Length: 446
Image 1: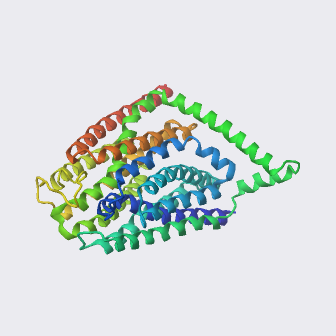
Image 2: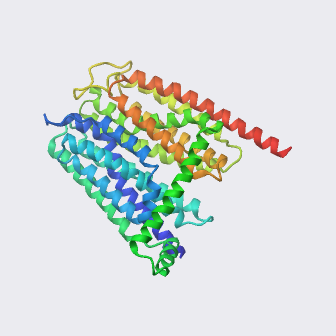
Image 3: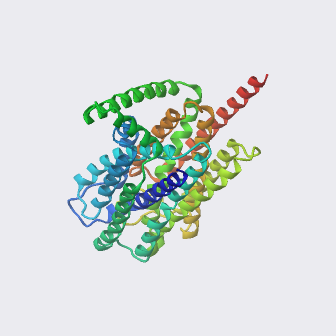
């Protein structure tokens, strides 16, 4: 039993590693790729596509649990993987309508994929193994930021323009990676929970297959309705309202490091022929920052001397330093430039070392905020963790969608200023919530 569950967790992590090697790399470079297209009939925007994905994802989460309950986690993940692969394939022969259609579909697929992943991971874990299994899955997932971006660096380094053949080769590589990840879900073994459910349904021999799925759907809809009511209740609580600015900030930061900053580096004329290759290196360094931060703060927070507020404060300081250095090092028109390179000059002469240092700081700071938001939500809403996390993902995704839509129009200075203001506000509100919890504990003791 234990071997089967461990096998499932490893295969699950490997599947996500392959799929998100494709998608994370695609998100990092797609605005740069779209700008380089020699196609007069294509009028899509990488920023708008990513905005659609996160917007659809946020609302699709409301119905995803019902679908997963009816057709099962394995089949859901397989079908979702096909939607991810379809989105990657569009870049091989791009057209505007298919670009935006698959953006909508992958938003739905992402909600289904992550909901199924969470359920499958829980079904293959026990109280004594959930932390280990989550850590194994997380470590494999974070490695997805390394391999695809390494390919981008090796292929684009020294190139001032991205040729059609280069684009096709890259996205064929990413498509193969996504398909391999999707196929890996087919070799997942049935969990003990699924076996019990199937044997129970088989025992009800008088029920037809149609009736069986109808019963599943009715149960799932009732559970979804109950959870939705819980979400509406939690949204009115003081804790969620206070944590909302921090959740919004995490969404804006997600859009910045995953799609905007790489585009800015690639558009910086001062980097010359190294600019396009630096996009790949930047993605790798962001991933390293995420891995270092997640691992380090996971260990530190087991020690009572390191409180959540300390980690969030560190995240704020790290992001403020990164924002200031980006402001000095990257041209103001880098996110919005229509031409292949920037026209404005930054305050300092741009250097690759500072640009990559900022990539690391963005990843490190992001891990500070995300790990501690999950930590405080899991602590405060221990009995209602699922709806609490759903609220977090909803607010984060909507914020990321909004950020992607304005990223193509706002100059870099204004984007950084917005990040700094929300980062400070979110950190302050996080401190207030932590203080409230301390007072609550003190009052319970007396």
